[in-house]
Image 1: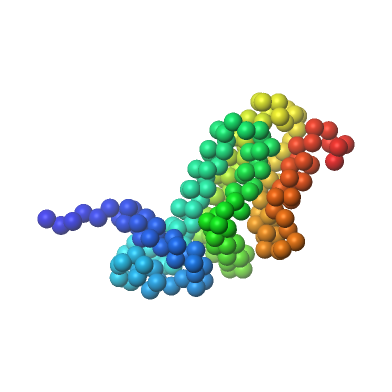
Image 2: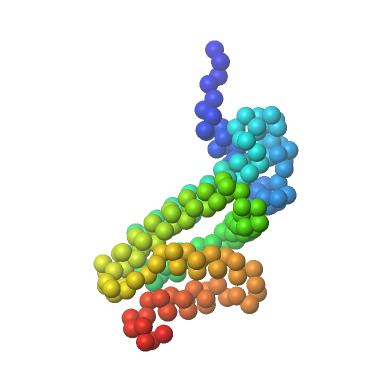
Length: 197
């Protein structure tokens, strides 16, 4: 009797086995041969489950995003202030060594997206952006319900995402103190009286 292979599970397992490889080598230096060797399969098998290297990278980055999203959803429910939730939202990519390794891959992903503009990367980026918008909206709505943000205060999730992207880009400069920049931004954003700015 033939063995039935769950293609989605096999695809996910191949990608998961290559996470460290991607973090170590980055997107551009990663090869199909390295992926096949790390996954313990032949190169032909890789092409049974993935169209190309970028497809594998998407699958791996998707696992990072899922983990990131899970942490952010826990943050939404955490018994801390809105300001603390927003701080952790922005700081999550910088909080430990693993996050910084993932951030390095994400920066490379952004660079490729900006220089080549492949359609699938743009679509993927938009899907991720929508998820993070939803999480930010939940944090902001809860902040208004709790009275930590004035009801009439308009705060754009898009603007918050632009700030987060700016942090990612500027984090490569030694003069950028991420913690300080986030705190200054949040003080401006959440000031109870706009004249305080």
